[in-house]
Image (tube, rainbow, N blue to C red; front, side, top):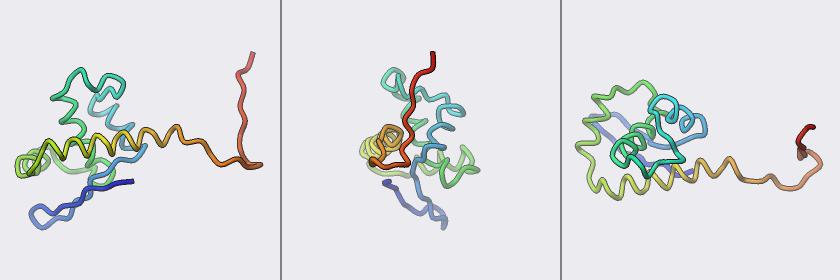
Length: 109
């Protein structure tokens, strides 16, 4: 998975998404991935804040605000984070290679 790395006030940061951090984004930040285009500003902010959850879960909102205010090329940054988020969500739909260990399921009646 892709990552965005930078340094702020002597601390190294790695922004990325995992399945768990995306689930936490939906829960904690009230991000609805199915309707992400409906509330552009709040969702852009959730996408940025959510990228800290995987590696920096205890970072304060104040520090996130400070970092964001100092970031350059914000439009490209949010676009890249959106791609990273989509890539992470898409991992849920990757089919396994065919093997004897594959679990075949069926709907019960």
